[in-house]
View: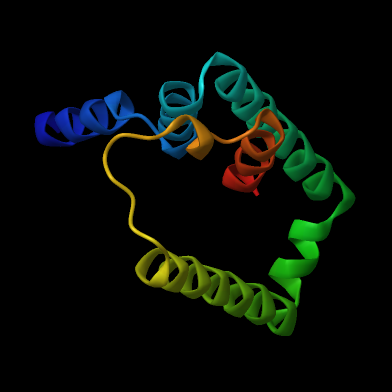
Length: 115
């Protein structure tokens, strides 16, 4: 029981992907991008909730075909991101001013973290 409590306490102290993305965007692109990322995360949460209320989650759970399609779409997207990271240009540790992202892009990334 003590081991379980220690593991749960450790996991609850770790930041999730939303916190890590917001921190990274704030540090690399400034306060406006960080706030836009946070707003995007909130919008993604809201959209996810609306879709769940409308029954999209129930449809995916009830239909094996729909769930399989969503699963393969997610895997294809992860493969795309991996290939883009591997084949894309390499960047130095210092981010130049033109490498900063706009608040609009930060908002879109925030939305995608939650969907």
